[in-house]
Length: 60
Image (cartoon, rainbow, N blue to C red; front, side, top):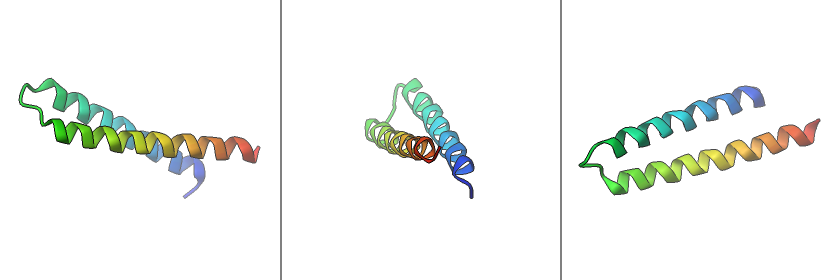
């Protein structure tokens, strides 16, 4: 998988987690622990995306 394709896949997963977080927050009985876990996963993906973008820039 090319770096660009991998980056695109990570961005899709990041967006999907964002939507999942929004869906959980919209419900009054939202599980705070689940939301916190989703936010941690989203942040980890964001960090990985930023690292890959930096690697792409440094290659050029």
